[in-house]
Image (cartoon, helix red, strand yellow):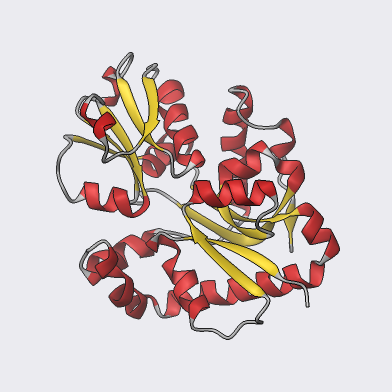
Amino acid sequence: MTKVRIGMVNFINTAPIYETWKIRPHPSDWHVVEAPPSTLNAMLAKGELDLGFVSSYEYGVRPSQYQILSDLSISANGSVGSVFLFSSVAPGKLSDEIVLLSGQSETSISLVKVLLENFFHVQPKYVVGDVNGSESVKAKAVLAIGDQALRLSSADEFPYKLDLAEVWCQYTDLPFVFAVCAVRDEFCKKYPEIVSAVHREFLYCKGEGRVQLEAICEKVAPRIPMHPDECYVYLRAIEYGLGARKQLALETFFQYLIDRNEASPQSVPLRIFGD
């Protein structure tokens, strides 16, 4: 049997899919690796994973290496609630100021640069580091994602909180796709039946996770910690499909990155498996 190595983001934003996945029986050769998006990106790029949820940015940089599994994403049509720029000054005043960027997601780093430079027309000084480390003392603004952003959001340290997906939606009238489920092209071509089987299982878990969302929130909310009702509101706002409008949103984001020489021109149009 062929072993398939599957990457899964270890934030609670994947809980509607992953908590369902964990209680389902799977073949013994389906091996799951949990990690932050940036770690999964690097592992997939190096061939240490065969498929999994990775930052959209990873696909944009190396599109010839991957295909995207259809109808799977981590996305939002408006506020996402866990990808924030926290700032002590208005975003329009961040030129030449230090903006500290969490290194956990390349997508969020690129998104905040697009928003600040293209939409707010400022040129900050970016530093990648630990949001809770010593670098945060000098920073006027901090990018935080995932569980860390949820904790900071409830702390009320910063007068300005920009939900990046919400700002993107306001300026583009499109949803934002933070992560996709990408499969290495060589693995896809060699083992299409295995890819199809994993794909079907992800799609099943996505649907079942929506049905069982209240119970899932009761289970995962203590990780933050947050009240299960708050967790329910948060996870209800996150979407996991990849329909036509989200594909357009992803291509629009990649076009911004292409213009910034951060993504490959081959990232548009998308290469999608299973459509």
